[in-house]
Length: 342
Image (cartoon, rainbow, N blue to C red; front, top):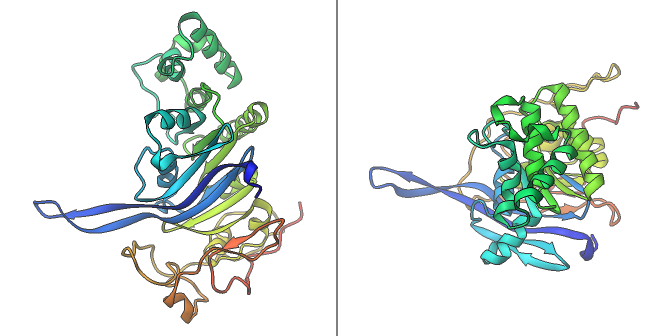
């Protein structure tokens, strides 16, 4: 990537939670939620972050915003051609970063304060940051509601008067209030009906084109990720195992976990007659500092090297279209299937 186009640069991000035991709550170990995660996000693109529940996707998002403090690593965010280290930012710099980086939450019901009107929910970022007050605030809220497809007359209502899809539109309007550059979408459509999901995805795409937004789209729905993402990063047990363009990853997954993940997704096509690859064993939380590949106990084609050292992310694609994969056997891929012609 060209350095000037990089909006977010995450380097060796780690987050571990202590395990306490006994009456005195002594720390007896650590749970590794995020372990040595590194990636970059370009201005204007959508990076999909996928993986099964509990792999650390949401923790990565919260560490980026410093909603939780990372255990190690660095996160750089570009503001006016200056890269700010979020992990070491003071209150002033962190305030600037959070004005330019917002989040859309998974649950449209619990993410809105039931005691506040829509005007106050959407206008709170404007009021707190001193951007608009009084009539100017009402006008800005009306503009935001119009942008997400809600009548401005609804601003005097409370969240309980809206459906799930309408509530998520309110959450999107709140995220847009300060004209951010980056929006982290934490499974924004997983709690919605399928018909409403399509509306939300089209809305997010239209807003991206209109305001020049950059998305990190977190989801476990591979069909949704394939539809919205320019690049896709696959996580397993707190680590990134593969990063590639959306078309390349879905056409030719190289990591065995990515292959199994894509094979498990139903494909509504009459020509598809693939077989699901069932992974043996269960997902575990290995102790911090364990050697070797974390997927080796479930991998059907592991080798001796898999038990000795963890394979680093390496580029097995071209320089123009990188395809990063953390697997010792990535040079001998076993793709799930050939891409089905539409």
